[in-house]
Image (cartoon, rainbow, N blue to C red):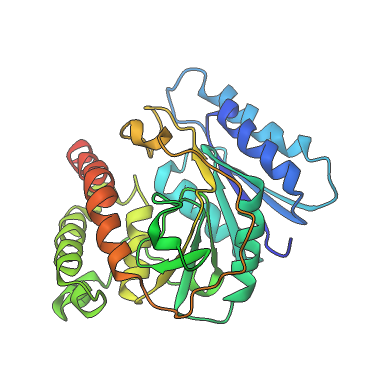
Length: 301
């Protein structure tokens, strides 16, 4: 594997063990492990964090191993985004797995090949392992498609993209003043929905920027007109429970993962699949992610 792998953990060693087991089978040449520190006053959490750190001692294949073990809790936003920035201090590409995203083995091969194939294509910003509409008609002509929506439950990206990440979304007022997503999406419906949800999020940025990072990453991709790669098979099983940071309902476990045996049918055009984007927004984004984000807004106000 050319691409280094980053495993991010916190206080769920049982979950992390399942993800680590798959990484062990893939045997990356360069492996990063980042574990956040315990929260003050949380009984038993220090021991759980320590258990997550012990996976570094279980690396039994030849590789270059790097660890980031925080003594103090950085929180959900900085704990994850800071770990990614840390790994990118040394790398130009990265496969990223959190402790509740269990990949099939072909996830690593798929990410590795896509990262190499599109390393110099500045239109592409992300490779996703999660595919919510796997084996559908959207993939009848190719093994993957391009979309404005690519998810972070098992994913990969390049340093050239992550360098633009800004947790505070500092330039959002300028972006929305020139029309925001209306300058990006082919669909007026999706553009208006994006402007509305991002504006609502930004209005609460001071309350929520320490608790989440994925919405800011989505904005980073949006403002740069970025495309993501979505595979024809779902390569990730999310095992997060209701207590997980990214959990909000049973839909998490509803999609089985499966191996992907072919990556040879490439899309003819590097453009967003408009019909897929609209279908995905209506059947997943609007029903689940938007609700999760704004339930957080209410919680942290």
